[in-house]
Length: 233
Image 1: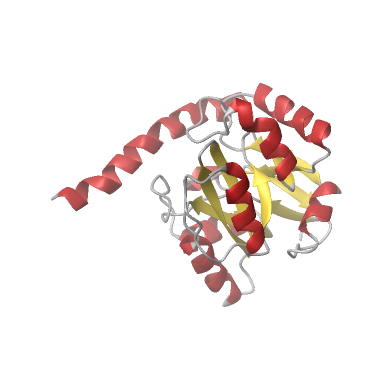
Image 2: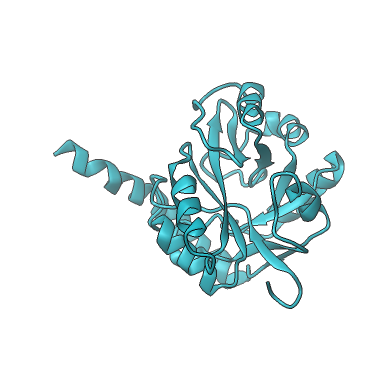
């Protein structure tokens, strides 16, 4: 806990994502160094990274607590499921995907809703519905390419009366702990939404970080390609 509360980062990736390079242990280590008290591990379409990170954290109380989750590809773009322990099929209709998350007792978070250049961002035609189906909306994303998208996401959260969240969306070590919510207590499945609603968004995004984000996002397809190449030989 910091002097002002607990730092909660609700969007992170490990090497279980095709464009992530951090092992679950390395992600936890980096988050600890940056003072993150609790983080969600939300690999693309797989829960394995979150479950592995949770097991590691459970065995070492000095590490941040872990919320296992998934950044799930629906037929209209990505949503995040939190407190998920089984994989969900990809490419389903949005409402079906939300139902699958809730069937596991999970919570739904809408990530980077206005990052139009982002691979997997929710389709504009489905943005309002996705927001209304979600428990929370990601207003600050550590990989954003500029500040305007955060202002638009904040307006969407206000319009739909959903709590605003922040997440680093870390795929690499320099990105860990870049955006988070300061909350009054460590969350549980039952208390998370209320804690976020009463929390405070903080981030380290400055012009330098926005410039770097263009480079980091440009590296993602390279990382995915390198992951695929060995299996072809």
